[in-house]
Length: 228
Image (tube, rainbow, N blue to C red; front, side):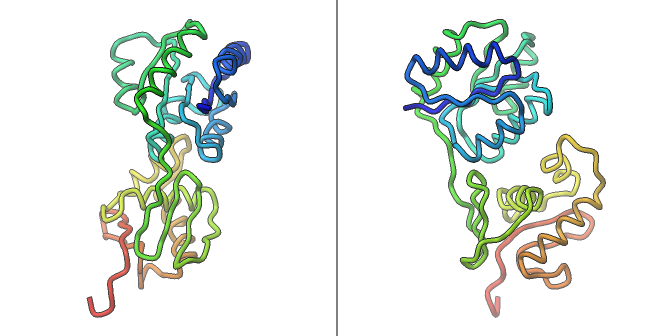
């Protein structure tokens, strides 16, 4: 049974779409906020997400980017913005399709069916870097077989660096991707990197995984082999 997550702040619209999709044979979950939706994406791993852009707690485009950072699951964006430039921007940001409000529940169902026919689905592959294993969808991480107890921000930071293994990521990029809806300074990144290093059993002066490239940023890479 296809799993469809509907993230829509309008209760009437949300429930109408949900009823139609259930009647069409889908397993449906409904969320009214961005944070609830992101939680369901990670915990439930749906096959398709229907995403409204006008959410009360976080802009839908930011939600789209967060989903796309960890998964290739199809995202159908529902928007009241019908300008061509806006549609192009959404598609470039990672949307697989879009529908302009007001729309019918039947239209949503047809577009979901089309996305499912493409055969796409959630990606939950682990990222392995030396003895470090990160699963962005399950939000788990382990080091040399032992689970890491990370805060939400620490995990987001580690996962972002893991997705860019071997690449230097600037502090500005980390602030944009890990703290997208908040105002913080580069010191915030440095503090969280210090906490993360402790949990990885290393120090900035003696790094194993998190390497500071002075004046540029941070690179996550596997430890060098002895004698390497």
